[in-house]
Length: 597
Image (tube, rainbow, N blue to C red; front, side, top):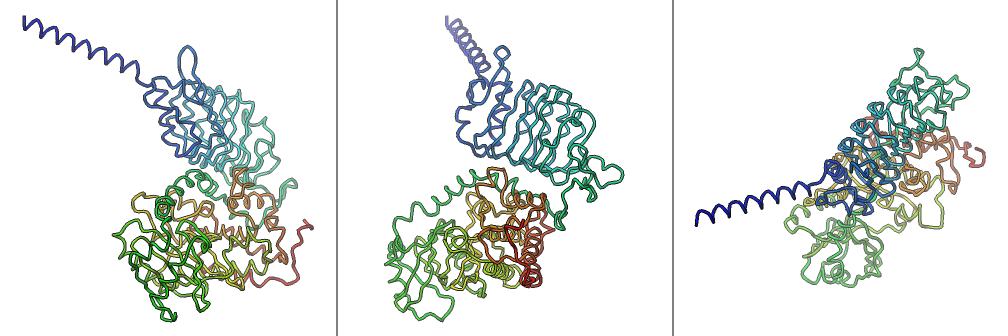
């Protein structure tokens, strides 16, 4: 009887295991679903389109943006256009072997186009326009025999157009305009039938389709330099700087992480400041605080300063940003200072913080904002700086009604360059700023520029979240290699300075909405104008007294600074030399008239 009962129990257990295994097999996600989940993983930001994409779903056909064949249940359409996607395209997309339509246009996708897409041989329509995709067009696209539409326009693609695309006999719509492609446009096969509209906006393309001869006397095979011949009457005249000009990968990765940067930045600010700001400065100093002064030229006791700090409130706030809230501190004798409040996140770093602040406090230079000292409280650091009556360059350019004339703008650029050059080459230890931008260039009453917040980016790296490339920099100013690797160098500062110069010249922020709508930033806009031989149009129309010789020289400096190759960028010492010798001493009679061109 007992043995029979045991056999019955074993049979029941075995049956249960078999049923469970069968249910698991039924509920397991399909291979197409796995490929789509891999695609989702490579996306770091969106408008929420992926909320319905769940690992536990056995059928990805119910997911937003996904369409399947009614009979085979294989994915045939992936349409995620205009969903604010930020990230790269997973190579696993090539596993969707039954895919007929791939529509990812109007997002902020970056990185290369996976050559694995060439495995989706049933594709009929590919829409990838309006992103920040870089590198070359995969030759594997030549395997998409059923392809009817291929739109790769408004990206930052480089290299030549693959000859293999000429094999796509069903291709009726083809667009690679507004990229940075070079070389001879292939004339074999299908590509010969497309007109200039399919190729416009590429700096280095040449060929009969766009009526531009190639320089190479041997025909400039695809992949060659493909520079237009200067003796072709249909060509636009190249400028002396156009050969140096390569679109910055900032248009690839700098504008491409916009939403993600906002998310990271918001989280960072909340972590650093949100939970502690309510208490105010009075709470900071009431729990016990000490004052450290770096220079003995201020006639204030610790008691004097603490007493004033306790009176500060929200009405005294004059600015805020990634490094903290800034207050205006007016002493009884009329002296005014700027007080930057930084919330502590790690008590164990106090000694390191104090040591670094002592180094920053020892640095004094005409074109740097002077750090006078700091107040060390249990919950925050209160950094005491000289107050500059002119506010920030960002305010002067974008918020005030009065306009800066050409001489004032040149003077500001020169001051910022000298301050940054001192940090890079002359102070000890040398300092990489990491966050050069217009709001970190302050102006005194004479509109002389001084660099602020130097050293703070390194000091406030978030060792826990490891997002230093996000924290230590501002969207639109970051060098492409810095955003990709997180490694800051003097040359990443030089790139940011070049963006700053373009901002001062144009009066537009690096992420002006007119650039973003076209898939560009201020560097991409400059490159476009140079291609069209219209680079002088970058000048702010409200700027008076512009001189052509100094404008051209300054544009040349900026172009070198924002080169996508760090090795091609000059040092800040060299920038200062060029500014002094070529920009600040133009021909006095050579004025710019915006109505003459």
